[in-house]
Amino acid sequence: MKIYKITLKLSTKFRDLSNLIWLRYPHPLSLRIGGIEVRDPNAVAKIKDGLKEVKSDLEKLFYIALELREFYRGLYKDIGADFVAYGLLESHDYNARYEEMDKWASKRFIPPALFKNGELVTRNLRDILLLGVRVHIESTAYESWDQTLFEDSLGNKVDLHHPWNKETKVKKLTGDYLFTVKQAIDSERFMLSTGDLARLLSYRTAKGKPKVLNYEWDYVANDVIERFFDGVFTVALLYDYIIKVEESKDFSQKSRYEENELAVGAHDAPRGDNAHWIIQKGGIILRYRIITLTDRNFSSNGGPVEKSIVGHRITEENEKIEGLDALRVIRSFDSCSACAVHIITLSNNIVKLL
Image 1 (cartoon, one colour):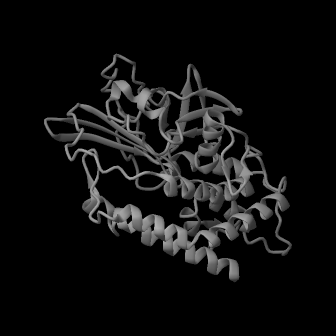
Image 2 (spheres, rainbow, N blue to C red):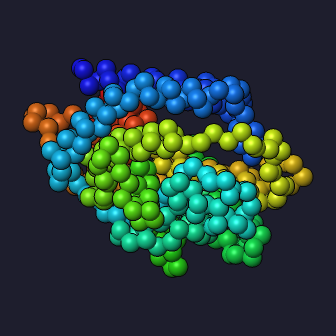
Image 3 (cartoon, helix red, strand yellow):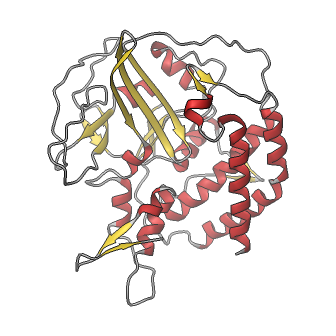
């Protein structure tokens, strides 16, 4: 109970601090084209002061997580080191220009990266995001679509299954609505997991071992306990980043927005990567698609969550299996989705897990 109170205190404090920038309803109130609008000019100083107030609690939680990591090491199923990260926190070189995406994205605090079997494939965000993402709807409630876009503004070929081409066509009102997101590298297609583990591995291979509270992080496995620990480690890492960041007083209010028919935005959200694709003309949006971290991690037909659960050892000692192991797997990927988990028993009873 004491640990729970610490985590509740931290989560409440972090939300209050984030509200200084995002407010309670971020999209309509604080977002503007090319950036965000901060209503409180002292927001940065208040955030730093607020973080310092909970530093000791964060340290306690970190060392508890570290001890749990060591205690449970090797217990859970390792699904392999196939990862993708879009990157986190822009540098001052960011200019939103599509043709310079590789340049400015590579200078993010945590840079983009795509890994296969633990080996770095590329850091080029345009290749990862725009030319490599594929959406497949076989065996789902959707119908296929026709290709309307064949190349981007630089002349790169755009695949039929790329989000810029995707059109939502529901063929029936019942069935599987989980489409499958795959990554294309040359002629190969494979599924990637995303989240804190992917980000830390990207940082590790680009800048060396990240270090917080005198502890250096290195890759161990892609399993439940590692994903849990890496979430706590990332919070501590970003704590150090925010405390050290220098507030810029010299910035332009002018938007960097340029009107293009094709547009894309990609950044890591707290639970993993998130990307939006838009086709517009004359100020009218003709097509909009989003591929979220949930779409990747929860992809059917062998996606990361499915792969983690199938074949996982049962640690429950009760005769009646309650599904807690599956719940832990899902929570390790996505704490928000864990509250929506249901189990269908052999007798077709649906049980909601809390």
